[in-house]
Image 1 (tube, chains in turn green, brown):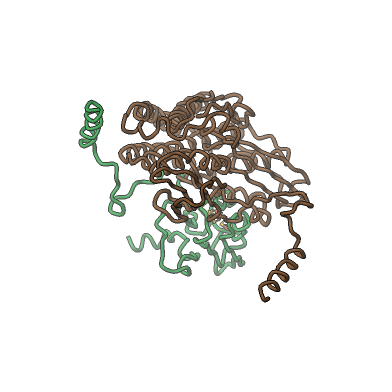
Image 2: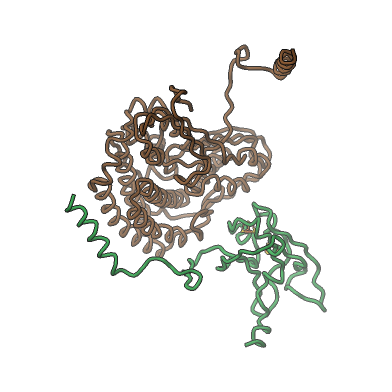
Length: 147
Length: 398
Ligand code: SF4
Ligand code: SF4
C-alpha cells in the first residue's frame, strides 16, 4: 500500500513540472484546425465582385433550413456579381445552423465558406439571424481605405 | 424494469436530476441499511421524438438529424444510417470511402472509451485518473477536428460516401497521436488493474455471469466482459472490417474490473486497425451520387457502436422521405442488467455499477410499443376504458 501511494505521488510530482494543459480562454485561444467549420463568410472575387450569384443551391441543400436567399437581377449601373443575378437578401439563421458545411459543398461559385470564428453567443434571437452585411467580407477597396 | 421485492423497506429515490451522472434518469433503491436490496429505473426524460421527426425530412436531412442522436457516438449513427440507405438505394460505396468511415469510427471509439474511462474513474472518486484520461483524450479530439472539421458532430459521411479525404499530413498527425495514446493506454491498463485502492472498488463488484448477460440481452463491451462472444465488427463485418479486421476482446470475470479491462484493451485494437487503414488506404473515389428518391423497400443495418450493437430499421416508400426509421441503441439493452446487478451491493457502489454499462440516456429514450394479443385482459379499447370510467364514478357517487 505504501509503495502504491509513493508510486501515485511520484506521478503527481513529475506532473508538477509539466506545463499546464489548461488554456486560459478567452485570454488565450487555442487555434482551430484547418478544416474547422465555424461562422460563414460570403466571399468576393479579387476585383471586389461578390461570388454569390443568388442561385439558392445552398438554401436547398441545407438540412436545417437555415439559409434564406432572395435573388435579384444585376444591371450595368448596379453590378454586384459577375453573373446575371446576385443575392439581394442573404440570411443565415445561426440558431438553426448545425455547422455541417453542406452549403459550402453545394455552392457552385465557392461563395459561402465556413470560416474559423466560433464565438457566436448573443443576448437576443434576432441578432443571431446574420444578414448579408454581416456575412459578406469587406470590399478590397474598403480594406485599403481603412489601412 | 422492476426488481423491488420488499416494498415495505426503506426506498431512496434519486433523480431525475442528480449529481451522480450528467443525464436525467430516476432511480429507486430499496435499502436495508447500506445494502441495496432492489432497484427500479425509470427512463424517458429526454425523449426527443427523433424517429417521428425523420419521417418529415428528406433522406439527406435525416443524415444530419440522426448524427445528433448521440453526442458521443455521432459518427456511428450516421454510418449505420448511411449503410442502410445505401443498401436501400442499391449503391455500392467506393472502398476508399468505406475505409475512411472505418477510420473515423475507430477514432470515435477511442474518444468514447477514454471519455468513459474518465467518467467511471470519477464515479469511483478517482478524479486524478479522470483528469489525466481526459487530458489525453484531447489528442484524439484534436485528430478528429483536424480530420473532419469538428470535435463532436463530424459530418464526415454523406449518402454514398464521405466528405473528407486523408492526406499525407493528416496521416502523420494521426499516427503520432495514436502512438502517444498507445503509450498512455498501457499506463491506464496498469492503473486499472493494479492500483489497489481502485481495484477494491471494481474487483468482484457487480459480477454478471455469461448466462445473466445473455438473459438480459447485454451488448458490446458490457457483454464481452462477461464472456459473451459478440462483436458486430467480427460477426457481420460492415464498412471495411473484412480488409481491416479487429480481434474480439473478451474477459470472463464479468465484474466491473473486467469491464474496465475490456474497454481499455479495445483501445489497442482500435490503434492497430487505424494503423492498418492508414497503411493501406485504398485509392479511388470518395463518393458516388445518391438518387433523391428511393423505391419502396425495407432493410436493417447493424453496426458495433462504442457501447455495443446499434441497430437501424429503415423503410422507404418511393418518395424522398423515409416511411419509417427505427433505432435501437445499445444502452437500452444494457440497462436491464443494472437492477439485476444492484442487489446485494452498497449504495455507494450504485454510481459505479451504473457507469459500468457506459449508459447513454438521451440516445436510448425512444418509444416502445408492446404488442399484446387482442384478447389479452390487459388490452383495453377506448370504449372499454370509457365504460370503466363511467361505472367507476357511479360507484363513487353512491
Ligand atoms: S452549415 Fe449546414 S446547417 Fe449551416 S447553413 Fe450551411 S448547410 Fe445549413
Ligand atoms: S452562396 Fe453559393 S449556393 Fe448560395 S445562393 Fe450564393 S452562389 Fe448559390
